[in-house]
Every structure is written in structure tokens, then in C-alpha cells.
Image (cartoon, rainbow, N blue to C red; front, side):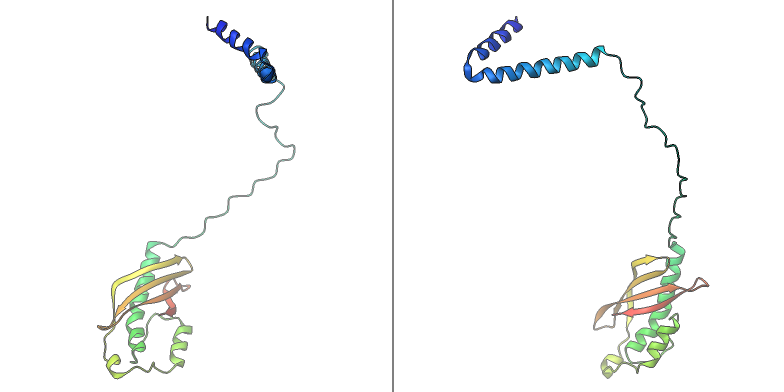
Length: 180
């Protein structure tokens, strides 16, 4: 008899004037929901509506997918690091006021360093022997440029040098810029 109890509550709800509009709204919603459910269950689906949208009359030719950008291989990165290792001894000597050949530098960087006088450093600093420790870190890379960080110590001071390297047409790498 749960329906009898529900019917009794609805009758009491309808009997009070303040709740009459609420009761009427509930009845309208219940009837609409029942009609919608009945329509979905009884009526057959409309077969005239296609499941997929119709194909366009004029299909555009699809553009081929864009080629993926070239990637930097591990061998390229190793070659760039080797060039940096050959560059650093000469450059570090130069930065401490001593002339030594600087290898694997681009012609522009070589000309720039040659056009400047040796850095003026006090004799006690000039006697220090700077060296790279903890290897080289890759700070950025793509097939056209590699940025490497070199951790340098000279027995008194530790600092970082950032090297920019670019490939040559022959596949070797040259240091094109130095930032301290």
C-alpha cells in the first residue's frame, strides 16, 4: 500500500491553499515526464535521420602532414660537447691574461677575441689554473644551436660559463658565443 500513502500525502498537499501551486507544478512535471518516457519506449526511432553527417559534395584534398622538425641526435650533442672541451683550455687561458691557441671557435668569435687586448688581470690571478669540473651541462639544444654550461674553478673562485655552439656545413660544431 505505498501508493495509498503517496496518494494521501498528495491529497493533503492539494488541500492547503499555499501549496496548491506547488502541487499543480509537480503534477505538470510528472505528466510531462511520463509522456516523454512513453514516447521514447513506444515510438520507433526515426530512420530518416542519418547516424553520420552527410559527406560534403566537394571534398577538399587533404594536405599532407607537416614533416616533423629535425631532431638533435645524441651523436650531435656529443660532437658539440667535444668541440666545447677543445675550446675551453685556450679560452680560459685567454680570460686569465695568457695567450694560447683557441680551437673550435667560429671565425667571427676568433676575430672578436683577437681584436681585443688580453684581459688585464692581476699577476696573482694570472697564475691560477682554471679548469672545468663536473662536466658540461646541456642548457638548451636544437639542430641549429646547442647551449652548454661549463662549471669552472681556479682554486679560488668557481663560476659558470655558457657556450653557444652551431654546426658547420661539414657537420662539426663551433663555439659561436661565450657568456660569463
